[in-house]
Image (tube, rainbow, N blue to C red; front, top):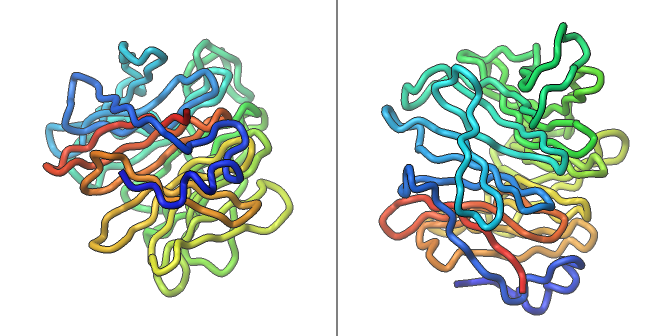
Length: 311
C-alpha cells in the first residue's frame, strides 16, 4: 500500500473522517468476481455500482448494496441490455446510464434517474420510477449521454457528446426539467461527473494541447478551479462531497492510474492506492463522512470494487 504523506495531511484534508489509517475492503458481486466497479456512496453507506466489462457477452449490470455489504440488489434500467448505476443521493434517488446493445464498443448511452418510489415529475402524465436524462443537444453517433451524480436538491450532473466526439458537461434540474451547460472556458471538452449538496460540480476537461485536468465549479456563479497532478497529462475528478473534498485519479508512470484525494481550499492532494491494486486504483465517490468507493486492478487484470474508510 502506498499513500503519499497521508498521515501528515489527513487532518487538513478531511475534517469529518481522517484517513491516517485507512481500511480497504474489496466488494465484488459474486455474479462476476472478475469485473466490478463501485461508483457512488451516500451518507448511510449505500453503494451503487455494476459488474461486467461490457465486452461482447459480458454486459454491464447495475446493482446497489447496503451495509453490511452482503446482499447485492440488481439495479438496471427496464428493457436495457446494459446498465451502469453511477451515483445516488441521501433521498434514494440514483443516476445511471443504459444501452440497448452489447456490441463490445460503440454502444449508445442514455442517461436516467431512478427513484425509490414513484413520483410525479413536471411534464409527465403520471407518477414514474424512472426518468430519462438526455440532453437534446446531443449530436454524436451513436448518441452518448451519461448521468453520473445527483445531490439532495435533485440536480443531476453528467455530459453528452457532440458530432466530433467532444464532451459537454450539464446539470439537469428535476424540478424544472431543464439542462444547464457546465462551461469551463478555454477547453475543448468538458465532462461533469458529480455534484454536492452545495451545487458544487466536479469533473474533468481536455485542453487544446490534449491534457486532461480535474475541475471544481459552482453550478451558478464563480470560476472553475482546475487541477493537474504534477508531471501527469491526465487527472480527473469523479466525485465530491459536501465539504468540497474531491476524489478521482491521475495517470502516472507506465500509464498506471492512481487514486487522488484533493482539497480545493488548500490545493493539497494525496495519492491513494489499494494494497492489491498492482495495475492501478481509481476513486469514484466520497460521502460526507469521508468514506470513499472506487475500484482497483489486480496483478492478473481483474477489476475489483473497493470501499475505503478511515479509522
